[in-house]
Amino acid sequence: MTELLAIVLCGAAGCFIGGALIQSDPDGRLATLRRRGRIAGAVVLGSIVLFVIAGLIEGLFRQVVHDVTARYALAGATSVFWFVYFGAPRRPAI
Image 1 (cartoon, one colour):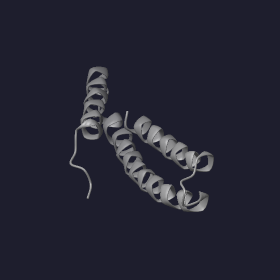
Image 2 (cartoon, one colour):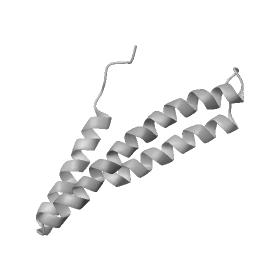
Image 3 (spheres, one colour):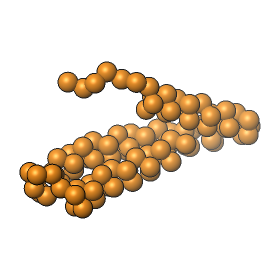
């Protein structure tokens, strides 16, 4: 589940940048691309961390645990964790 989330986040970052090509702000297309590129870059860097976590789960947990129930439990637990992490209300950024 973690690697699928990372893929979706990278795709969303690409769409966010692509939206700047279609509809730019009054500042101009290059300024919009620069601003959105920085935001999308941060999302992609966070996705790299998710890929590392997914690699650790695949490399360690999957090789050690052969019980299908435990594997599904881990997939469910990570799904719930990421849903709560990204879906929980947060304070607005300053």
